[in-house]
Length: 254
Image 1 (cartoon, one colour):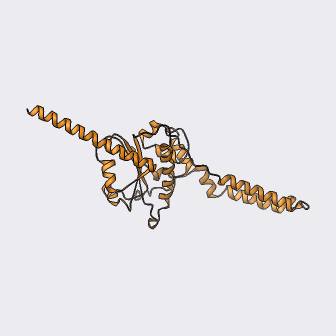
Image 2: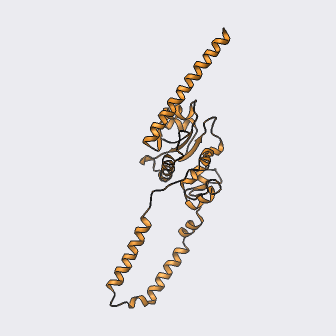
Image 3: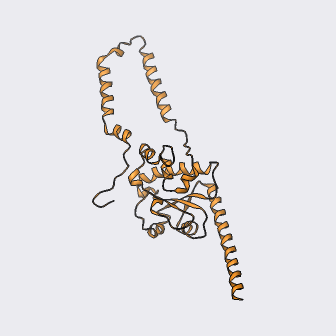
């Protein structure tokens, strides 16, 4: 009798767990259909990310986006995170096995305390089973947001070079899914070039009867000096080397 009752109890528990899991997956899919990045507070995080049963992976960005927090890095990271999540949401490989979420400090301060987290932004991958390991936390302080540095760091994993692809590294599942990042078209460079060409063309047209200024040695010398200063400036070094956005202090490790 005891064996039979235990079997019945296990069957009931198994059925309850399946129903709970199906409900959680359905809810996550509904939220994901509205927004590529699901916003979560403390209760949602504990129920859908931390608590079993769960057969899906979750990537969480812990951040502080409110203006009073004055976290410019958080805004930059959020833009890249949105690009990555949108690429996954509208890719042919999209499924209910992976979700992108965000926990803002002002909406889930208890989550930050629970995880002993005192900095933002931080990206963590929560696997379907077990607790996140050290490799599931993305080291933003080491890599930063420079696309060149990120491209070097993720080349062996994702095989591409852009900022959003760097978020693939701590998530083993993401690397296996081969998410291809699609960025919104940026026409700022094209527009700037068109304006420059129009400006130069308009100047030449207005001075078409007197083009002696083209042979002005002083003008060309000033232009050459501007180019030299630009190439030897720290900004050009940053553009070529792509150093990390921030470095750890060797004295306190922060």
